[in-house]
Amino acid sequence: MKSNTILFGLSVLFLPALALGQTQKAAVTPIMAGKSIATVPTESGQVRGYIHNGTFTFKGIPYAKANRFEAPTKPDSWTGVRSSMTYGPVCPMDVTTSTNDEFEFPFHHDWGYTNENCLSLNVWTPQLTAAQKRPVMVWLHGGGFTGGSSVELPSYDGENLTKKGDVVVVTVNHRLNVLGFLDLSAYGDKYKNSPNAGLMDLVSALQWVKQNIDQFGGDPNNVTIFGQSGGGAKVTSLMNAPSAKGLFHKAIVQSGSYLTSFTESDLAKKVSAALLAELNLQPSQVDSLQKISYERLNEAGKKALRKVGESMKAEGRPTFGLGWGPIHDGTFLPYQLTEPAAMALSKNIPLLVGSTKNEFAPFMPGTRDLSMDAAKANLQKKYGDKTEAYLAAVKKAYPETVKPSDYIDFDIMFRTGTIRQAGQKAVAGAAPVYAYLFSWQSPVLDGAYKSMHCMELPFVFDNISRCEEMTGGGKEAHTLADKMSRAWIAFARTGNPNHKGLPTWPVYTAETGSTMIFDTVNQVKKHHDKELLEIASGKPL
Image 1 (tube, helix red, strand yellow):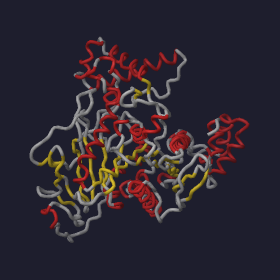
Image 2 (cartoon, one colour):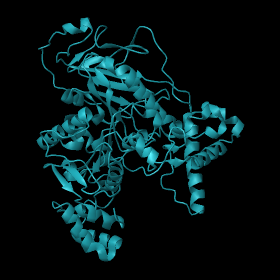
Image 3 (cartoon, helix red, strand yellow):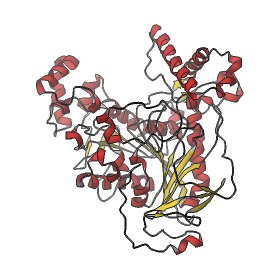
Image 4 (cartoon, helix red, strand yellow):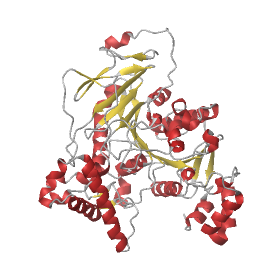
């Protein structure tokens, strides 16, 4: 990842505390690395990181190990000190062979290197001491349940968030796609945990945090899990997993409220059977799956998903949601999302949930330079005699609407998902829910990116300078990032995102619909887009 680190010349300060167990904050100096610097004991052995601008940084620490399609177990112990200064491998996934130049520019991906031995995590902390208990923020990366990693985007770097809030930040790699969610439970007890192995990895990571994070200055009894897109869906999944209960205490879902149900086990088993058939394997040969190359396994998995999808279409069944992801296996995920027992699991977990105004809409071809006449013609095809009501509802929800594209390229799916998830969670006697909408518009590329999917990430992590291709790096962006990152930190600390830099942020209820709008001017609105969403979705909220 690139870094716009500010060098502090030759004014290097001493770190006398390092030799005495590193109990004091490190002095600000660009890089400090060496045998006696940033060493921490863990249950598996000592790790050594480095200090960057005063922040203790550790990368690639193994939190578990796992055989293919089996539950994770504790990592192997080691003697001596393990060097932990670079990111660990990422889970194998489809290889990226080309990108759209304009779309790739703001993301600045780092694809990392792949290896199935990918169960590692990274830690940023202001201080190495168990004496002071800091809130712990555990980040779950995006990419659905099929791709991505903790190193993928420059916004994921935890240093600035650690500095800003005196918190400990942890980011995690885990198994994805066919490696994390192939249900082989029908083929013997050995594979009983295969349906949700990728989520079980995350539980193991949280168990590692509970057992070790105090050595990094963190409070194992004040852990917030937060994630965006697929990471947000992982947060939701863990809120429904009994084995994760007690391992985290607050939850943040960013542009991830798209899960409406977990894949049913009978459907997941059809995919697994189709995969075996693709590889010409009998059920008795299931162990062969542990030895074939990932490339063959991945290709067979994709073909199996297509074949099951085709058979579902032939039966007149919807195929939306068919793919690798959490499975309602009756064990790790014993309930569907809306069952009372599922809701009870996370009843006492405060939730912060939201989305961005535009999400994927700016990527839609042909929307950027539309004339108003062309925009109205497109809307007429979709909404017919409701077009004028739709246009008025857009202007009511977003008075700042000016460009023709502004009428058509805002998000419906994630916003309605946010309202659904917030409303389901905000029940009497439950922990509070806070809702937000990120509507700030990036000035980059003549404003083409707007508030697209992932746009809020540099603001949450206070990484505007690291992500100038996405944010523009201007004063306005830095000001908003300060306010947003402080809200996330306040929520991680207390379960309430309010702080002096924001207007009062009330809890969300289905009746009030109170939502914090993050923009150049931050404000709370109540059901501001209800009419618009109902027209656009064709159904009441």
